[in-house]
Image (cartoon, rainbow, N blue to C red; front, side):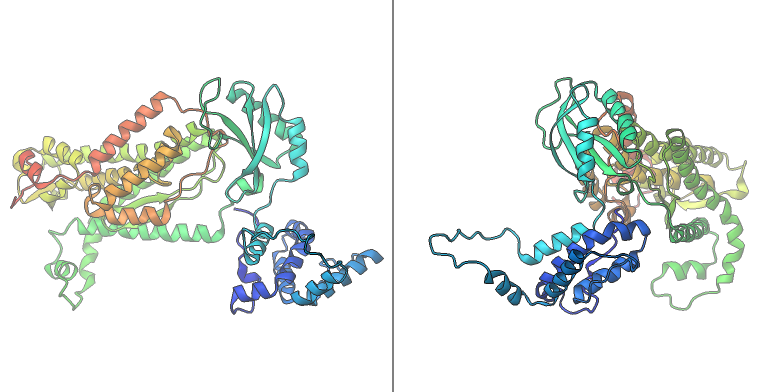
Length: 550
């Protein structure tokens, strides 16, 4: 997330070849690069001149002349002398430099020699660490740390005892110590005072003290306060390419939803079309123009699937707006089985607390599930009275209802044993739209990674609970216990796109309350019941679908 985090070591070795050999042979030059970059980096970043910074790194690596990036700047005689010495140093080989350094040193006697120690890191690693530090995110100013310790913290709020690195790359400062008041009141006071002292330069986080085995005397976990630069801690703005990708994914999702509507009419499709898509030995493609008449009848189902996904995203935005949390545009994920796997929606601002994380995460799938269940219920009622919508009914295999224990039981209760215990069942398209919407909502509520369920689990019960639930979810998906045939593609989707947990809130300590935990626990139970398939023995006993063999 840092300003220069996108730069790689390819900038240092522009001519290719063995990077490690070049790095070791030019160690002295790389160290000189560090001195130059320390002086020039802030000025170049402030101007946004990343191309110039690239050329500076290249010239340092190749041992070229060290020209100043400001041609109008003048230097003193001492500065010129220092520049000449640095230039000579850059052209010297390591052996020559070592010889010159040892020329002025008196020979050491055997008794005066200091014992040698084996370094913890090789020279290559040390130089890599230095350059990564230079090219990484901006760190907190040491002078600011001293001012903040003197003016922000104190005996009445938080007594600082020590400091540690904070953030993904150690770019921030974590203040550890003793809390001197109610944590919420102290945090609010510190946030206000930090803004008065530093303006909008830094963000302050209240987190649980790492590796603390004892609780705070006032109850709850011990807390510490982390500080990061604002440009480092806050998410970046949405780029033009991200808008283009989101638009293309939405078009693909429309196509997959229409395809689902056409596939639901399999009993009406021409036999050669069905054979081409179901028979692996079919080679000759049929005339696809035959599908055009079925597109119009597929649109209602496509509208239903897309409506659920849009309703889901609107729920997120309505929950985020009053809390002044910005969200990214949704990146819809097309899927030919369900029409869509949902959408990836990122937080574009730091969440204020864990309550906001839980509320925003749950509102989306709850809204989508409410609309889906409404369509599913209306569709079942219309299916139980075929005379009301006889022209819209479609035939589906009764085995479809074995894909979900909860939805299969509801369908069995409404349609009856005789209807369900047959090879095919006549249902209204709203049943399929609602079924797909409920399944997608259940998948997104799984407590793993950065899914809505994962965010809600992290906000409700903490990061350790998310790790445990994530391992359990991956295991159940891998074994096919949840989701049936969709378990593997969904598990791969989560691993590729949504595996990382959400970043901490500003106030990542205060509890969310009992009722939020109860609601989320009840939602997880319904998710399991929705994604749990019905095995043949139970299906035969309950009368869900026609089981031909046991």
